[in-house]
Image (tube, rainbow, N blue to C red; front, side, top):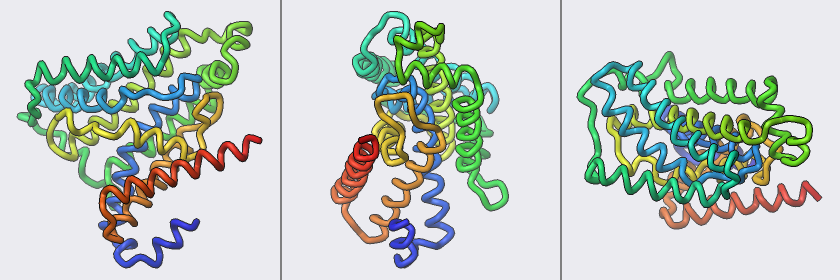
Length: 289
């Protein structure tokens, strides 16, 4: 409420360009945050490999566009889902530490990707991707896609047996094993869904910038973590939702837009957002007492 009140008093905040910019930025981060939510709900804290997975997926999507838009979308989603599902298998079935696995994946994907591409970006030789960066009516396509993804994610978490198992595993893994919730396969499923959501973000970002590049995913894993915390998702697992993640992403995007309009430097923007995230953590901890 305080952020909204400040926004109303800030010149230029309520313009169409400003609002669309906030919504689009929130949509990109929101999609990744939805993916992160599945990992966090299952009690696996967070993943530091979503950003680099996003980057690699933008390259897969862009390079596949000559075969058609739908083929490119399929290739991108299949790649990101497979990358994250592999990490989920290591965590779920082998009992590997999720943080260590994500850091190892970050290094492997970055190293392999930059070696294969020579550190160069990829630019589309096919058409069709531009439709994903446009608008339908008055709404940007990325915003509509993010809302749709959020609704699907919310449905999975609240209305399916998988969602119930995921929350149970995140709350108490041993109890979940006793009642037959299959923690290992549930963990793989959570990581796979996180890969799909990250792949959606990669497709939208690649379409927006009309390229595939390892720079495009920089910072999105940390932004997604911040969105989870600001939205009130429990980082230790067992509580939270995609809706909260998207609300958190919208809150952060709004704060960042205000800081830009106020003319604050990039360093100060990081500082203010960091304080906002820290405040969210403190409030969450106080509420749990």
